[in-house]
Image (cartoon, rainbow, N blue to C red; front, side, top):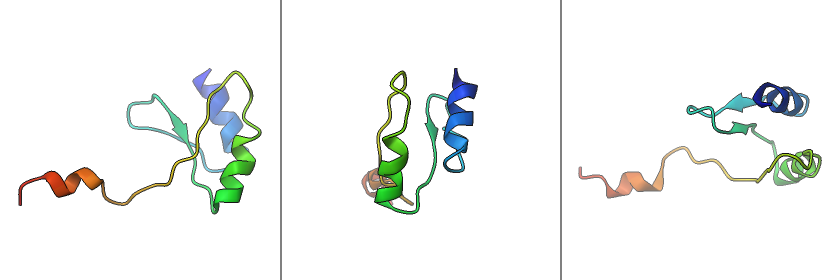
Length: 64
């Protein structure tokens, strides 16, 4: 099923697996593009839209 989901998403954007392989994701050029893709995800899969970060906010908690 992971390969099927990866193939499906790759038709809409450059799809990739997370490092743990637990999620599939793809960048979108805009919020409207992300919404367009998410609206078409088959019902048997869950999807959500998230904004990416270059640096984790948790980094501020690390000692310097």
